[in-house]
Length: 96
Image (cartoon, rainbow, N blue to C red):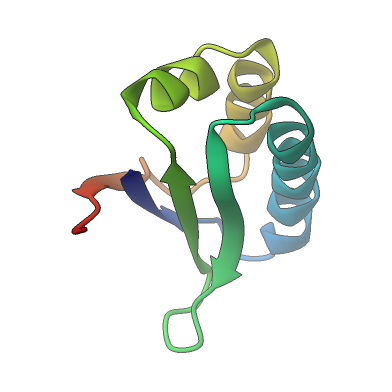
């Protein structure tokens, strides 16, 4: 399994707009990607305007498939208007 943690900072006051786009994306991921095991948006309790996306995939093929979907690309463009910088993305390998 492959985990991904993405730290996303949004512009002041843009949280609700960002959340709406992300939650639409999350619904599409859950409905269309059997290789995705978890796709969860979380909001930091200690860092203002900071979100963390927790992702878990069956394998590398599932990660590649996710990034190649039209809805992921479209959501990325839509969310870009609300971001306060580039997301920080970390890839993790499951310990079994």
